[in-house]
Image 1 (cartoon, rainbow, N blue to C red):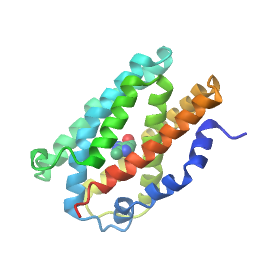
Image 2: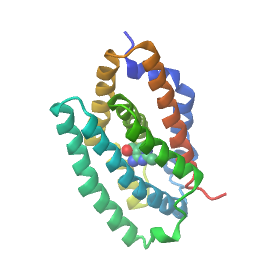
Image 3: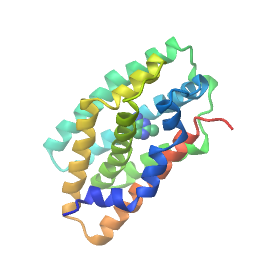
Amino acid sequence: METFSERLLREHQDAWRAMQQHRFVLDIEHDRLPESVFNRYLVFEGNFVATAIAIFALGVSKAPDIRQQRWLIGVLNALVDTQIAWFERVLAERRVDPADYPDDLPGVRRFRDGMLHTAQQGSYAQIITLMFGAEWMYYHWCRRVSERSQQDADVRRWVEMHAEEEFYQQACWLKEELDRCAHGLSEAEKQALSALYGEVLQWEIDFHTAAYVD
Ligand SMILES: Cc1ncc(CO)c(N)n1
């Protein structure tokens, strides 16, 4: 039988494909991503880590029991320690100062505000849908692209970080947790989560487009 997460993937195949074939993804796959685009992306992405911390913290506070809280706190720890430190080091080494970049481009703002406001106002199941939408998609393109080579060591590491077993396990946890959450929901609630999942994919597409100035 089709699981709920499989249903979401099926219902939003077009947006999924558009993201897996996004210009940003293909540029990394073919090792032709302009340095200026990656630097810009790193600034937007580094800012989003702070938002991701807030979203996962809201997940901790809305989680049904300690089992979920324990896992989500592990994710939070990795974001607060490892991820933040990685951005600080890489931005400094690349001499990228976030103050030199816009912080309110429509594509970046819509992604950030859409994710954050949903997490603030929404249910635990909505938060899991947001993070499943972001991570399952990200793992899949990074996994594919990691089969190729990237000359820039920071681009390479970025891809590897999201193709590694640890990130895969995190994405799988979200997928299984979403399926578990869906068990107790009505068809109308499931349709609302599916619509939210479709929005997340579209926000992601626009966020990645914002790395290009044209
Ligand atoms: C924009 C974006 N989407 C998804 C992920 C996966 O966590 C990420 N790091 N950044």
